[in-house]
Image (cartoon, rainbow, N blue to C red; front, side, top):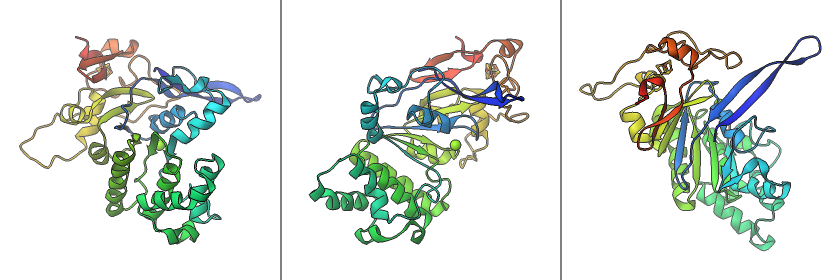
Length: 316
Ligand code: SF4
Ligand code: MG
């Protein structure tokens, strides 16, 4: 709810705060249990920071609320947070750097399970074997080290490590972007089957629109720390409404030549989130911008049932 996360910019002789990078600047959306919300946008738009801020990784938020099962995550006590750490997990883009090279895979996957006392000692091995099997890994992989695995296998290890804690919600931050295209589909299908089996809720962050279309039930589009459009995947892809979404989707080739899609070509480059434009932050690049857009920030409106847009064009 209106989530904000700013990072201070230090400068001057005394290294005082001279400004803020408004990485997440008032983002509101809902996640449905057992469903996937895709979060798209160019790099630096605040997708990853949104994911991390929801998980309460990286200090205090700047404003707004994060409600998990109705409870404000940032008001939780250390004991509640400890429990929440198992229920909310994150999978990163780079399976190479997120695994300790010095630990065998069985340890990597089981470490936190043991720390949190999630299963009785005598069931531990079977439990880890089962999680590994669910993720397409073999029992003999437990004694191997991360460098002995391919990129796809390493991502399976990261997924197994996250799922071993039996989470309800997983932030997947560009989980297939570092992988070969041929491996991407395997990992996506694994994430989908695990979701069905375990009723997982995903926030799936990606700049790859075709991957997001494939895996997501709902999609949010971010620009300079704002969620400019959000709705059901089919609606967003069939008729994007926000000028930025239209521009983003103009870049996807359409296989059917009889289908016409409005082409919106962006001017200029993304402004700095440390010094974002006034009014609608997209006005410096929007082909439909009016005088009003330069001064007045548009509000989030439900334009069609479940389809939210932040743009003055959709006022009525
Ligand atoms: Fe473009 Fe104005 Fe809509 Fe912003 S509010 S997207 S500048 S038309
Ligand atoms: Mg990112």
